[in-house]
Image (cartoon, rainbow, N blue to C red; front, side, top):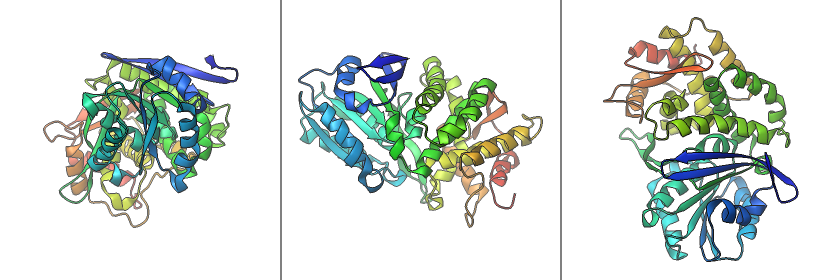
Length: 386
């Protein structure tokens, strides 16, 4: 843990990605020191232009509150401009990327410029893809304003946008690129303004990381949960750092998902299929919550789990987080259609569904070629009739 200035303390992590290096800073009061951080950690010079891709946030809170802090901190130098984005899965699209490109063009941002994203995972993904393409790639800085963004979306270099499916659904992250940020600024003070639903959604990814990491991480998650749910300002930086560290350590070993990194998709094949049904109105973390339950049930049906104890434990923790473990009333599932969506998932091979399933806490495996009835048992686990 290191100090910045006279009063802020932070956790620091370094992540190597081929020719790229990402510095991750987690602490309090960091947005107000953004220029100093960009100079020290991302190589910003006095002449470089900075363009902001800013999440409007509910009632404009991200733009009006956190955006103003960030802009004030970045004043001076080569100039600051911005594009405001809507953080909806339906708006996570190529036209959104083009809006950022237009903003970069109009502001005269060249190859020495920098794109800074301020917002949740959707805005971080849009901005990352925009940075990867503008003038064949410019420096990217991410300042996530959601718990999910801090522990997951902003770490690891994946960027991407959604594309419509032939059946009218939404294909998650079907277009994208690997483009790691130079710097990730996780100012935990911004979590005080995050809506309750959005905050709780981020806890699904934190639980997923604990499941992957092992029993010690699970016990720490359980122990920290009461203070985290209260958004204890002193507890949040360490909690975020622990969860982000799980993802960072895996990405460090497998940057392009050639092997171990696929474990981070625990529950996500189910989750992405659920998100394709936009009528369900699920946040990503809510879909992951359901996906974790479904993955536990499928693992049991596949004979990977000795009993249903892990599913019970996972359900209980998700319910303590205030997350869904069954679909909303009236949400009709068609397993055949959902299996078709799962076969389009980026993890599938030659149309064969690949699931990331738990054997036990700390022991997660990628499995493919499971019978349809095993895959469908996951859907049964989250249906109201189960």
